[in-house]
Image (cartoon, rainbow, N blue to C red; front, top):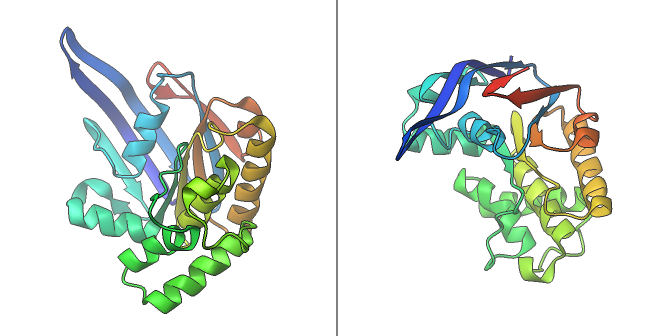
Length: 221
């Protein structure tokens, strides 16, 4: 299994008491599988994805990715683990405005101590795979929303991660652009044999995955 989640709870202190968002989530995902997590706004989908990425820690329970218990890593260890094992695609892209498409895509490799020439070659190849071979030198503000999300996908895949986590990846795009970009993501994931876990409120998007689970009342079913 590439991903094992055991009895994960997550709560947040509130002025009037404690807000329980996740109440014992259980999940196993096999290598190469695509899994959608559905849920309404506020159901805890993004909270769960943050726990899977090691960006937050569960109140109780364990998250294991590629055989590594995330709770056993300190902040530096988590950052290094994410750089080598995880690719994250956000709804809002999170590209650095002062960097070109090529520089944004090569950044994860450089942070992982890949030599600059090799990082640039791999980033160029990744951008060509998402159809942006002619936009390498463009800055985010010079790209459309769909193009920015393509850069974000290239950046997530360039390290050849074991697991891709996607948080409402088509949520900021119009329907047609979202369909094109998500088709591209699924094609690339299949070609690389990468595991994909995405959270979405879209039933049609979830139907493209091998499995679709629904987060309701803090548990997956």
